[in-house]
Amino acid sequence: MNVLVTGATGYIGGRLVPRLLDRGCEVRCLSRDPAQLVLDPWRDRVEVVEADALDPESLDKALEGCDVAYFMIHAMKGSPRSFADQGRRAAQNFIRASDRAGLQRIIYLGGLGDDDEQLSEHLASRHEVGQILAEGKTPVVELRAAVIIGSGSMSFEMIRHLTEVLPVIMKPKWVGTRCQPIAVRNVLEILTTIVDDPDLAAGIYEIGGPEILTYEEMMQIYAEVAGLRKRIVIPLPIFSSRLSPLLVGLATPLPVAVARPLIESLENDVVVTRSSVPGFQPADMMPYREALQKALVRISHFDVETRWSDALTAPAAPLPGDPAWSGAAMEVDRRVADSKASTDDLFWAVTRIGGDVGYYTMNWTWILRGWFDRLIGGVGLRRGRRHPEELRPGEALDFFRVAAIDPERRRLMLRAEMKVPGTAWLGWSVEPTNGGSRLIQVARFVPKGLAGRLYWWSLLPFHAPIFKRMATRIARTAEKRSTVDSSGNGLPED
Image (cartoon, rainbow, N blue to C red; front, side):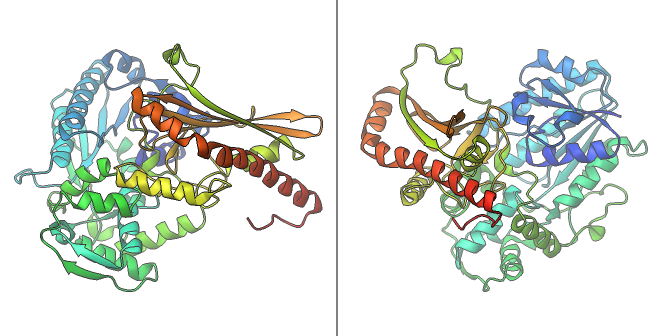
């Protein structure tokens, strides 16, 4: 089978690709920015085509020669009208291109919810996309799922952080909503099995796990599995869907802009009421408790394959030096630090930044900035890192995103995603010297209007103690590694 996977940088898509390859499929990935897939372990086994579902002309090349396509393009940020409009346009463009290409099947992963009820904007958009795809000539298999439980999934991270951070839980209406969670392992198993099943008819299939639980029950089970005390739940009807995203934004890695449509969708019961895919009945799926246990083991072993936060919600912003920034006023803070360490050890120290390691100096200032960012609706620091030492292009790192990484040339560029009046980057490059290596660290900021300039100037007094010491301590950390590696005694404690 020649298979096209959209959303390969997303949570499900990034896990689906290697499983399709193991099944013997020829896989082509559609991406707006192919550079985001460069360091994925399966990159050299797939074909990548640069295309955008919102650009109909680019889709014909992407679909040419394919038998099956997975449609997993979905936006959540922005107003309900904007993400619903994007989903509508993407689906219309995709089904027209699929009909022209003569596809045998489209597989679409949508959301559960009763069509006869008044659905949230988010769920209504998911259903509308399925309806648009089904109106074409190409047969469509639509899978509808509710909460997907797995390491790094959006729903798992929300349940995990709410339960761990809040010993007392205010109970708005949605905490009592019924849901039928399903393990990510089962979702992937279903998605790969149906790719070449000739007996599966086009239509809507609802998939879910063996239990129907409320969100309160899911959080209490999580507390038990994670070894936490039972959470105290206080009914608070006035804690509405308007206030809940603010709490979720403060207590979890989800920014308010993403939490809002998600919370609104949680006010609808999402349980299986239609036929499931033959051979994958809810009673046969992995129980919720076991799915939690497996997710926590993955996290403890730094073996998180993909995360919700690594999915690109917008085209990558241009890097400094691109033509789009020619003539723009750019503020720059440049620091240089020499090290006796090798270039490999120095770049290793660079790529450990963020997460549990922190930012090498005055970490309390970064934590404070993260909390302030959460208060004003930003992403904050809670997203952390997928792995303590590995980075891939496009993945989230605290309130940054990896804009570019080149291990061979030893360069790393992070793009800031915290709320700032402008666009900011933080980057490093490593060069060899006669005595070891040299670190070049550059912070760049393109201010937006007067507010952007005032923001940069107000931070100038902090730049010297923070950025200078950061570069120096990265260089010293690399030297410690070089010394310990040569003695064979293992790494020292941070």
